Length: 429
Ligand code: PLP
Image (cartoon, rainbow, N blue to C red; front, side):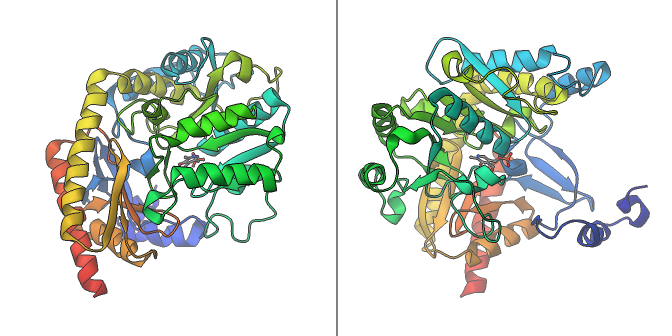
């Protein structure tokens, strides 16, 4: 019998969580019982409009019917095999679809599948090192790439991601990324990289630069339209590979399958994750054969990478997100959310900027502290809206609504954002 069946309440689960689960994983007080589309229900029967999407993993909605059906069918055939022990078609099919939608240059695209975004970033770095014979990695301010040793090193926020967890991995160099709202332009960022190459690291020793086209955890900061291309030109002069980390910005999140498509740049490697598995853990690294196949057989892999259930779901997800009607709806949602957030900003002095790409949108509060954002997200929860903050200062309210949300739920959710902001501002005053 589960804890809830024994005791019948979310408080009991929360108490047991405190008793048995590590403190180091931060949680909200919501205990989920079911979810569908853009709605979540808790064990006490409260309904929430979901603007968090399981942290960006539900672009196609909780329980995409085609994915659920594919998972059920796969469930009856076989579960784990380990792709290295016995190949299976769903893995190969996901790689074929990733090749079809790949934004990378080159005609023959290859992929490897992993279980988490961090693992995919690690593998992208391994591939880039093998392909170039170089050790170093260039990353950016406000980056988030994961919580493993390498990806934690690559991540750009001390508390809570790095404090107390050193020593860090060697040969990771960081440059400013454009952040116009806080005064960093594309010109500043390009100059800073050129300076880094003179003062800090020989560019001939750098295997790759890893960039999120829209920085996610760092504050939903879209790269300015000119930056990725200028970066790629600069990297190209030094033989450095351009890796797009689209774990959060990919799989339809910005109104195109990959955000980088909107920048006119063909990366050398693409990292995907989160929504790829439609709610099951799946991530990938994709790129041209001449780069990906620089690694000898046996050099890449992992016991669980490309789990058959996750692959079955991903086939349905990739089929869905490249449909013109899915992407059109995503763009329509983006226009609507942006308009509503801009109206909200015009009425509310605590909002400094509305920004994002397509429906990957956020507001940054003027105060560079997490207090108001925290009060807003908990007020939202009390009102029946799942809402998340992010950013170096924890002061960015981001919208990761499943892109299947109804007009009514979207409108209500946005009203709740406003009500929560007003409540929180009144409480703070
Ligand atoms: N890269 C980006 C851009 C992310 O947003 C994340 C997670 O938020 C990761 C990598 C790490 O993914 P995971 O949490 O699946 O390891």
